[in-house]
Image (cartoon, rainbow, N blue to C red; front, side, top):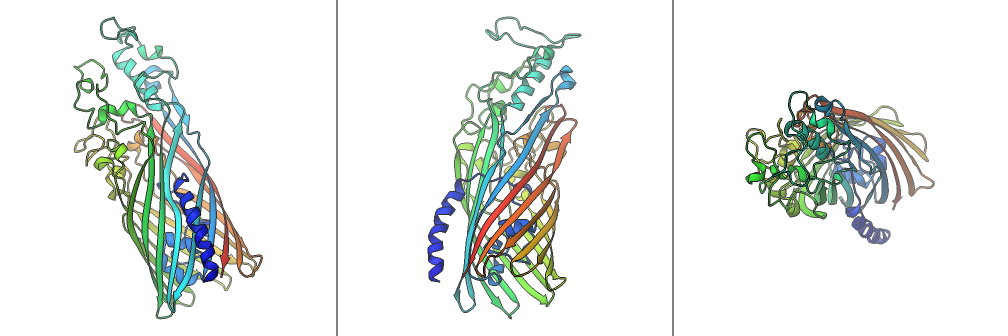
Length: 486
């Protein structure tokens, strides 16, 4: 117990750092696995706990991992690209860009200790997930410039109201072809485009064992979120503030000029923070000497609202962390080899700001939907996803353990929702991982894992802009961690 107290101080310090680290994720915006050991198994640990990071999946596993301290870091590299193909209008324009921020550091820290004859207390702080996109080109504004010129012509930049336009579209007149490559509309707040969402969870947990072979555990999920957005000025007419204004409702045949009073809850604000809580419960049971089962359920983590972005996210800035559940089985194939299978469902459709549909063709607000920020406001159109994980763990000897796995999940983003998801191109469906543990002595472990998420593209022939659009992503990550047993 005395050894644990020194590690508690380190836990507090690193936990504070973890909140400020930017996290990105793979199964939608949740992480594939938590900690190097779990990542080496594509996260298939609900019935095969490895270390204190099992709290992020099944707190009942604390009864099986002994007293320990775990500290790790993930080096995560997502490569994201988006494209709006306006060549159907001008024959020349192809607006595309790669998100330029491609390396994120994500810490993980936790411990486990016995506090009674049959009671364990554990803690883990982990990056639950997140999203980031950072485009130097504002794909929305460049596409709007081309499409606006094709439909309404090119206004005089000095006096667009009283002077004749520089180009009027008509038979044989292609105004869009006169728009310089990379030019925008001049709309305010249409500089660099992107969002940054970070989710960290602090999870104190208790677990107990009963009937010798069965355990139950519960974790309090204390959520912390940070969010910022930039470059979304083209969507001012989709906000509750802007939509009713005259500049967003021009006479037929005239382009919208934008609201005279723009929303201050859409874009270009500093990072905003949200806090909340939920719970996770879990069970782990050895039903046969060679078969162990596990199950867990995580409630929605109910978060406070992002007040600075109350006209971007539905329900006045609400962005709860979705509920999810996991079922799994581990089969002891040989004395040295274990095979684990997990099934998980993440319920994105339970959070309006994630699952509400985005703009319809026009672009316009779909029937039954409302402007950005309303209870039924525009969202990203994500669907619930199922995740299937298969992993193997081989104990070569007392010093070395090897791991590997493969995972598949449903696509959360329908083709019809590509436009808004330029900001959140979470397209990944397949992952492969491998890893190992080296034990230099009986109390120390060094752990490594590598993950590759295969490139996946979501595209549509007709986005809400009326032109083809696509988003794609692939990822690599390396996890390193150190564990100390007591």
